[in-house]
Length: 390
Ligand code: PMP
Image (cartoon, rainbow, N blue to C red; front, side):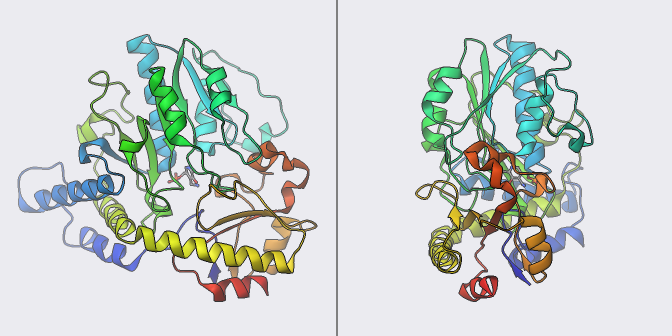
C-alpha cells in the first residue's frame, strides 16, 4: 500500500507507540488520584508530554490544554470564548471566520449563528441556510482569494465594534495554502479581539513560534503528526487579559485546569508528547524532504498530465500537500477503480461524499469532482511517486 493521504491521518511512529505502551500496561495509574507511585508516574508523564508539546511551539507548558482532538479543540475555543465574552465580559457577540475553514470550525460557527444543526448533513446540501434560532451571536464567513487565503483588507473591513472572536485556519487541509497568521492576528490584537487559529495541519510542518504571532488560541491534533488518534490540544496564551476568559468545555473535576474535566487518556497524551518531541527534533529535515519530494512529484505529474492544475498558493503552502484538478477524471470513481493499493483523497475526510466547498470558494466549483489531494509524509519516497503515476 502506498499511502499518500497524510493530511487525513498519519501512521503512528514506532517511537511513539513504544512510549505509549507502558501506559496501557503496567503504568495504568490515574494522574488525578492520590500520592501513590502509580498515580504520580501517570501525572509526571502527562506533564512531561505537556512540556514537549509546549516546547515545539515555544510556549509555556501551562499554556497547553489537552483535548480529544482538533475538532474538540476548535469547538472548545469558539464556543468557550464566545460564551465567556457574551455572558461574563459583555464584550461582544460578533464572530468572524472564513468560508474555507475545517468543518469543526464552520459548523460550530453555524450553530452559534442560530442554524438548526441536523445530523444528516446531506439534507442541508444546496439549501440556502438562514438562522433558525437566535442564540445571540452574529457570524461573518469571510470570502477568500484565489488561493483560499483571507486578506488583511477583507478581515479589517469586517471587524465591528462588537467583534469578540476571529477564527482563521493556518494551513488549509485541502489545498495547503497558508494564511498569514502573524499579520492577521496582529490586527486582532490591535483591536483587542481574541484570535484563534486552527493549526492542525501545520504542526510539525513549519516552525510555529507563539512569540512571533499574536494568536490567543491554537488548535492541534496528534494524529496528523505521527501520533495517536483521539488526542489533541489547545494552546491558550497566558497571561490573559482577565484571569479566565473562556468557559470550560467539560464541567466536572479539576483536570486541565478545570477547562476539561475527565480522567486523562494518559497513553494518548504521552504519545502526543513523544510525537511533538520527534517533530521538533526532525523539523528541518522533514521540511526539506517534503519540499523536495513535492517538487519532483509535481514535475512528474505535469509531464504525464499536462493539463493538470495545482491549486493553492505555490509560494506559501504546507510542504508535501498537493491539491490538484486533473481534468476529465471523476475523483471518487478514479480513486475507487484505479487506486486499490494507493491511498489518495478526493478532499477532506470530514467532507467525503460531498463536493468540496473549499474548491468551490476558490472558483473551481464546476470541476470540483476532478479534485485530487495527495499529502506526503516523511516516510514517502520517489518510488511511491513512480507507483502513483503508473
Ligand atoms: N482541523 C483541520 C484543519 C483538520 O485537517 C482536521 C482533521 N481532518 C481537524 C481540524 C479535526 O481533527 P480531529 O480529527 O483531531 O478532530
